[in-house]
Each structure stands twice: as structure tokens, then as C-alpha cells.
Length: 98
Length: 282
Image 1 (tube, rainbow over the protein chains, first blue to last red):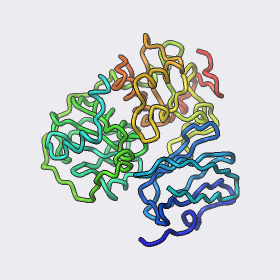
Image 2: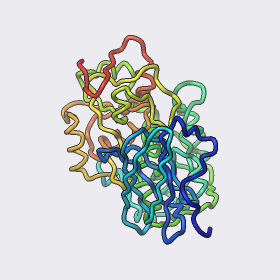
Image 3: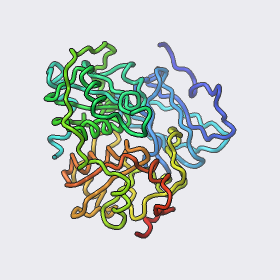
């Protein structure tokens, strides 16, 4: 695999108008990280959900509107926290570098 | 039971990869994860296709379990080490189920699949074939399984631990957002149950928190060590994880998993239900 795709996974077939989507891609040195884990923490820091990244380093959550933190864990890296705001009808795209 | 007998480390697993009496069993929420790569020699169990009855609202009976484990090449005296994704959520369910049918030596790989991957340990896509066995289950052990009437009787009397998310506990949600099936008729929780989301028992890397942290977590939710305990969630999987913590790691006596959980309780007519963030009255 050479080079990372920009942004999160394709939104074909997703009813974005009724969802608060948080998605993105995890990269290291410009290459996608396909064996990372992304955790969704709520505004109090409480664990809400976790997904493994796809082979292309991508991930997606259907969240509720509000403030969230994405915590990314990847092999041979310290965990990385990124704040993100979700809203119905919008797609919050987050590029995480580990 | 104790942490030392309930859990094995990833290093221990690596040292026992060629030990024929240690059988690794991968159980994932996403059953396709195994096919993308698994620990060498690990057998796959699909929590739904393999372990659910398919007709009755129940898991498979003893006869079907014996057939399944025989085909998988598992013997009665094997040490079974379960692991999987999502902090060992479904691995803990399969472990509880095998313990229910009396398998003697069952353990969890601390951290599960996630810790193994984060450590960059080896995964393979090799096909695993173990010679068939003749597995004989010891029989059902209802000391670790609670049924609805016992749960109703436990209101205000025993420790009830609801391990779902706060929104499910309060009745604002019927199921985790990504798992819409098998919802109950109504939302809420069993009155007097404390709410300790199952995931609080694990660190970020999927390993279990220390004994002291775990004891404090449940004590803060009002768990009385002098009383029997019943854990429940929506369909009995997340509560298997909490049953494992209380019974197998901390060694508390008389801990049961109510596998009917909210999908059953929230569909019963006439039983008491509490709404909102408060526990409610007996």
C-alpha cells in the first residue's frame, strides 16, 4: 500500500443528514496505520466506543451531537488524543498522526 | 478464583503456543476478525452462529456443545484460553458459557486481541486443524447463571449491577448504537441496581485494572461484599465480562450472570422498572 487516502471512509450509502458522523484516518509518516484502535470518549472522558482501523487506516463513529475525544492507540506509539465536535447532518473528519 | 488462575499474559501464551494441552479460542463481536489474522493455533468460535440455539431464545444445549467442542478438537482436560476484540467482551461470554457447562480450566488472555496487536505480536491466517475429540460436558452449573424470577427477588435484597452504558441504564437508549437488534419493549433498569459500565474494568490497552482499582470501582457503586451479586446488561455478554471480574479475578462468592438481561426483563409484563439516573426504590 503506498500513500494514504485523504479523509475518512467513503460516505456512499450513509444517511448523513440524520447522523452525527465522526471519522478519519490514522497515519504514520504519511502511510495509513491499519492495526490501530480508535476510542471515542465522551465529554467526561468516559469510554463510549472503540473500533479497529481498516486496512487503509480509516475509522468511523456514529456519535451524538456534542464534544468528544478520539484516543488513538497504535503499535510502537504513545496514545494520541484529539478533541472533536459532532453535529447532526455533518461529518467531522479527523486526521490522526501517530 | 484469583487473578493468577483467571488470567494469562501474552508472554505466557507465546511460551505455550506449541503446548497441545493449551487451546487458544478467539471469540469476536465481529466474527470476521479471526479470518484476517489470529494467534497461531487458535480455534475460532462464533458467539452467534456457534453458541446460540437459533430457534429458542437461549444458548445451545449440552448435547450441541459436546458436538461443537469435539469437532473443534477440544478435550475435557485442556486449558482453554479465550481472547478477542473489544476488551475480551465476547471472549468473556464464551468463557462464562464453557464454565457453565463445567469445563475445569478456563482463562482469559489479559488485554485480548487488542493488546496482542498493540504489542506487534504475530498473527497468522493459517488454517487450524485439531484432531476431533469426544468431549463430555460435566453438566449445567446454575450457581453462575441467574434467571428472571431470582432477579425479581433480588430487588432490594442482593447486589444488582447493571453494566450497560449510563444512557441505556437511564432508559434513554435501548441498545448500543451499533447493535440495534434484540431490543427490549421498554427502556430503564431493574430498581436498586447500581450502574458500573463494563468497560470501566479495563485499561485503555484492554488489560484489566488492578485488584485494588476494581474493588474500589464496585464498592463506589454500592456493592456489598456480604451479599450475593447478579450482573446484567442487554443480552448477557457485557455482564459476562463483569461476572468474570467479580467472580474469577476478585474471587467474590456467589456471583451470577443474568444472561436474559434487559432484553428479557424489559419485555416482561408487570415487573418493577426504574427510569433515569437514580437507582429507584425496592
